[in-house]
Image (cartoon, rainbow, N blue to C red; front, side):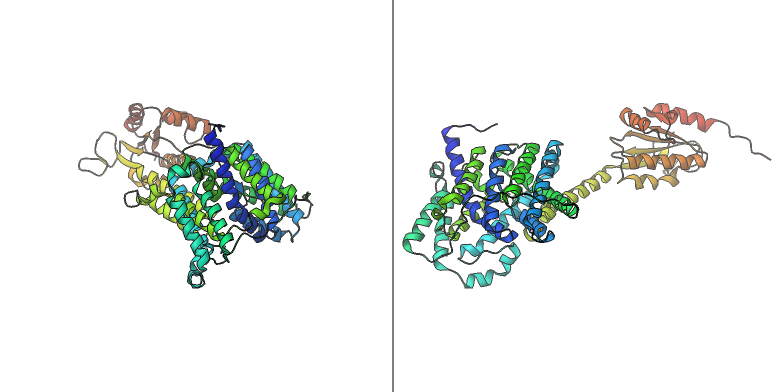
Length: 536
């Protein structure tokens, strides 16, 4: 559903975009400084990417701009090219082109295969990171760059508390947590806190940390440089930026979907992000992605359409072009109070309430992703969570596989009283998924089918068979043939067509059957045939 220009939607988008812009301002400046390209680069990136991604992206309420992971990679890029900004912007340009290509080949949909426990751990981890990073500015201390640093520095932060900053933060928390919903629908509580506490700080003459001076002026045009000597480095770094930015953006889109109960267009989002990052390359802006924290701020303040992202970018542009003095006196403690409310809201309470009753495997995945997100890196966390989820699913599929052996003329498995272990026809039944994870269990049954004249592989209850399973079946048939044991294979029609297409020499059409009774009859003919006379 596209954006509606009703009064409620218009007001929500304006307030949401304005609030997100205020929150994005100090982050953009800080990321710019941390990257080595300067505070202005962070502001340029937030404007360029924020505007184009809002207009062209596939998540209507998403706010895009410089993010922590992208800042770290860009800082590494700048170091790798010897501080040459034009070469670094070439990597940003390549990254944007790669994102556009990913969107055009429909690669964005792959993010939907990320399991919910991974998304849950990521969301709750981001929430905790926001809270931990805001403890220092909440108390009037300089902000820290990592959650672990914030935890370790907590005693020193508490010892150097600024009472005036803490008062502003406390009142901000009261406003954002206790403002009635009927008031918030008209004027978002974060905006009320922002204006009221800034006015209080200015008129009371509080000595607290504030946003401070903001770079002003239009960015200069930057022409990315390419050379044969640095092309490989630029290409690798650009692809790294593209992959990181794509994952970061699409995960933020999933968070937005989870909060608003909507669905984004992943491929369109990648294209919008790519175009935005390409513009960043030409204005000397810091590359970025969909920003989870700013997106949630936008949504909670009422943003629901593309106008919110456009408002966010235009607000930052207005500050850049001359309105900066209006925001220079905003206390960082007030922003910290607003962000702590955001961090509390983003925690996945639905999953947290089910920790005791949810499957242990899902809880383990969520806890792993949560811990890695908070203390290591969000991309590492998501990768580890997906791999762990895949491993657990494979383990479950293996548990659903079954392999049984018995004489064809008996109902009981081989080895029970009355069963014969010599001559006749032996049946090896394969049930459930037959794939690389379960092939070893089939090989373990080889000894149970020796000493007979024919073996029927009953795979009629196999839902799918991968190439590893096909090769394993081939090897078993070849091994039995070497010992003068005939093999017959029963498979469903789709798998029979798959085997026929592979043209496996050890699995010809002559030994493939659609039903067990026919295969058993053919095996019985072989078993009942007289043995050839011994020579000599």
